Image 1 (spheres, helix red, strand yellow):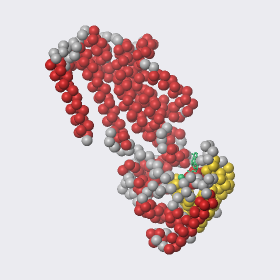
Image 2 (tube, protein in one colour; image 1 turned 90 degrees about the vertical axis):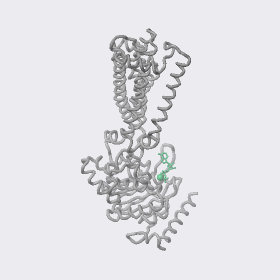
Image 3 (cartoon, helix red, strand yellow; image 1 turned 60 degrees about the horizontal axis):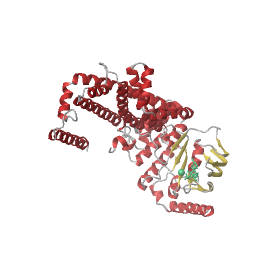
Length: 258
Length: 249
Ligand SMILES: Nc1ncnc2c1ncn2[C@@H]1O[C@H](COP(=O)(O)OP(=O)(O)O)[C@@H](O)[C@H]1O
Ligand SMILES: [Mg+2]
């Protein structure tokens, strides 16, 4: 079963790449329109020096934004669960932040933050934090009502109820939110880089894509794109593993089928 | 001397449902009382009032010594924390009371052995059968040695063989500990087997329509379950229940 889960998509990917390469060669498509996977791989190796530097920059922003989203999302959710009035008055603004397209507010943030890394971080965080906030809020309120009664019966303090009942109940929801936010923080970081559009040595993968576009270095553009996809997949797999390790003893999502 | 006395207790929910009306009863210290009635007659509501999880809209509860004693509660579902081992589930009430984890777990382990679950301390609830989960739930309710144990149809979801075994073990624990027990059930057979006193309830509005004493040998065991005496008592209680239903209809 585990085998099949890895093998099946791998076979599909290989087939897809083979067809792509064959098509490019058969119809002699020029590389500045569509490079084949082999050429992209070669470019990836050749330009690894610059590309890996950019990968590191993007990865750093992404992970920092994800950590901030997890921390602040969790904290806000706990506050919301403690105070209904706080939740009612602040949640709509979290929604507004979520539904406003990041490309529309990114220029403002870049002006205000006055620091490229910080503004990228803020943008990525805005995109990433909402699923964690809303999922965790839902999770904190979804504790078994009978267990809530049991805690009341034993005169548990607010803190005991939070720590021993509400937070563990919310863990599967938090982790599901985290998995969504992992991908979103990467998207947020890339979009913000596009808007910021800064060059230089400390620039991320989005800049490499733009740069390659200006220079008609299409194989390099694809190489950067491949790195972004790979990063997204790696983040998703890492968070899935984390979720499995934390929940395997008790939660259906980790013990049953997928 | 009664542990608790209810006088003219009523409970109306915010939805307008009158779940209980004019309930007066006394529960004697050390007694085993069954609340018997069809679903919707306010048995769970009455239990929640006793536990202090809800307040009556009329009438009064007065406790001997004025304060509500410590209470153990067993729900219809095992209601365990799925993220915690069986042992940590049983230790929960002690830890909430401020006991150090080591001491709490030592006492919890004793109680796991007493409900026949020695060796399953490190198991997670999902790895246990329904009957075993209910045993964990009972151990958790008794671990603080409460003077009063409230049970809300705890065995209704179990198969008959498991239910008989848990009935036997519950009586054994009661005979050893002599806590006061209030046991909600809709099974005539279960109530006659377990209880010294049966309060028959009727719905709309929920009220107590009959109180029957079950005079039977102690300890009760498998032999009692097949005796003519048991059958006769079951017939009496069934008749009382049927009368109550006819009157309510
Ligand atoms: N929280 C509640 N809010 C509104 N109505 C309720 C609530 N709990 C129970 N009831 C109603 O009160 C009546 C008695 O319910 P309950 O005490 O659960 O009965 P039983 O346990 O005997 O089945 C039912 O009609 C039920 O629908
Ligand atoms: Mg009920």
